[in-house]
Image (spheres, rainbow, N blue to C red):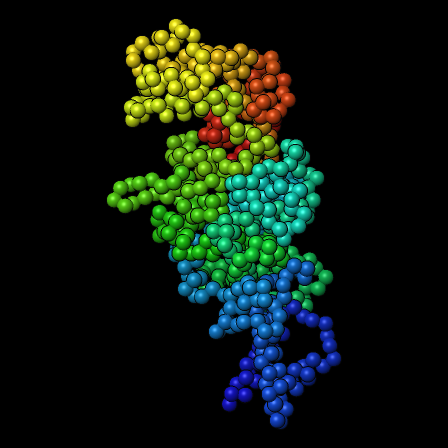
Length: 611
């Protein structure tokens, strides 16, 4: 009985592998050879049994590998080999490279679907999230940007876009080999000798792919605490490559996905396969091999699932303040702040302030706990609905996801020095720090005469005798009075009075990218029939002038500058300024002002849109 059971298992494995695997070149009577092995010799020798077991393992392993991906890349996809380790029910396959490919259990699928969409999600929201690929714009001027269709997954795309810009702008020379992920953590430095170019039309397809794959890998490993990345891919059971000869991988996948809809946890479980990578090199290879899937209409949802599984579903729930709410918000299906934070900082916390907020009684609200590579600004802060902390406001690289009430876009600079304090602001920070160190009043803003003399020594401030006597006459020194003296004291004596008239003004450029593409007045998806969208992905250059923190609002309107030497030192630009830039306003300017107070912005053409 045992031998007959093995024969039946083998025949079933062979049938399944032949149904799902990529067809191989025809050979002479392959079925006869297989039948001979299945039927066995009359003696049923040990060699025959061993051969049967090997064929069973190879056939099942081949079937699982074919099911785990629609279109593997021959150059970078490690193909399963004979002797792999199968799971108890054939649901898992551990490849020779150590990766684990498996199906989700019914329990995991239910938890994942409920966490993302909830129990009462509309078909419209599910359709939004099942029809957004991760694809670059076809327009030359915005070729570095990912195209976003109406609503829903734009939060996922904007976060990926921010990391893509990081690699394109600052590390493109180091991406010659996609199998190597540059380690660009908080301690990394900018190696390029010149500021990147604003002209993105010269980007190669290979360069963009390397930047995208590296960005996806970095995000997933960040979600996996730099220990693992889980890659979610699709298995299409009825996929038959023989019917798709002579067409591209994209078309193969598009046809394979025809009729596929995700409307329940069961639908998700049927088609989803997940692969766990503990090696960054392997993860990048697997992401590149499966890139056509992420470019397909299911791409954004697959990447979100990959990030959630990389973090771990239980950890995601523990990150959140209210784990009972779905991550995709009703009624419009937008990505929640928890999704955006997961992709930006590796934790699905719901708030944008730094650290935790203690509510008492052992209850906390969770915010951002560490430095981040790219940051976040929001229109809601300008409306006093929230406060973005310094971690997100001052990221490692000058790139920010920008949130409005209904959409996510990206703001960036070509020069990392735009985040530097200018000379006089740095001086202000140094003086205030020295003053606060001597403040024994519990934050009252005054210090003793003895402490004041220590501040003057540490900051190299040389006060005229009459000003020193006036400040010390009361027996203690108040910060506000000291600060007024510093503002009126010339720089040569350690003060902040700037005879050039710039008073620490910064002048620099920012760029805003909105990847939304609409093809009709209702914001429908661009179709394949060549219909011209009413709105294309758009890149806007903004000229930004920022007065120092202490100047009045009228400063930018009144000052006339003959030379921008101070601004050159702070922003690294050779700019001759004869009069202030005209002030223009759009909601994006309000977002920018949450990062650079009282910034004055100008641009050419239509105002930048954050919706």
